[in-house]
Image (cartoon, rainbow, N blue to C red; front, side, top):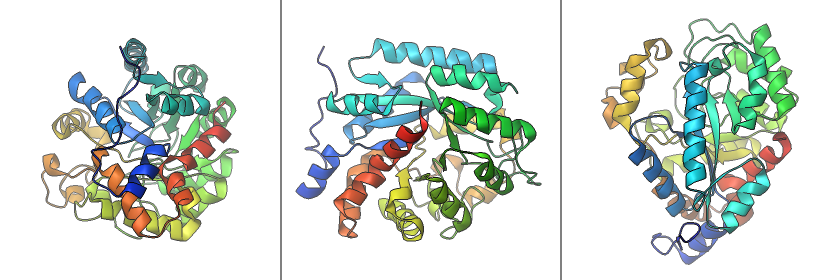
Length: 349
């Protein structure tokens, strides 16, 4: 079987300059929910990402409502699948693995958790998870857990003593600290504790759209000060009135770049390939879906199945739009993926 994906980018409807730039760029998407629905749409989505130029994607394999037992089985299952498809995929351990996969026409993948409950209140689980490919972890998913509070929590009590232990152990091991979905005070506490860059892998500016999942300019500034990245989220309800257009993605990039520079912007599009399966999962775990997270308040009258998500196929158009907005090719390469590579090379061990 021929190694790698046979994609030339000829089907991208963009200018020759954008096609050349997009084809040569290392493109990183730091957030793809990967535990919803049947296997077929999951793995088809990876093929779509590769066809759209993506070089590396981080996959959600567990969320705060998942147990340690479930999580270990999920990691084992996905590792086995990727090993069986090594002609097209690479499970990465280092940034050099991402670059090697790019040269070979393969899609590089790693794992992450959206929340810290898969640790089962044991910070010693961080290192084994890291060795199994879990390269970043959110502090909390919407609600309170043993580490801290989520962004929908009624009372934001900040980072717990156990949370401080978790952040320090993540720093030691090399796991990226991720603050998306996390409460404001907990975020501020993490910036004080972490000795490594801190990131929001999939969060948008609150200044552009009032949504509890979005973050204020002070948190964007703190991220840049730590050496970290804000990854733009492609969910329509987090960018505007259910608008997941490439223009709206550019608006997020413009704001963050204007505030802290293009070197602190990345992508974490959070593309949901199966809305119905997502909603079933939320309905099954209501404690992690407080009023407003996925419901009438957040969806602003839209049916959950109609929530818009920026799709992988929009990536070439994003490169084209950034060129038209007079971003330099160096800045565009950074936004598409090189900024993430810089931070991951600094954090991963």
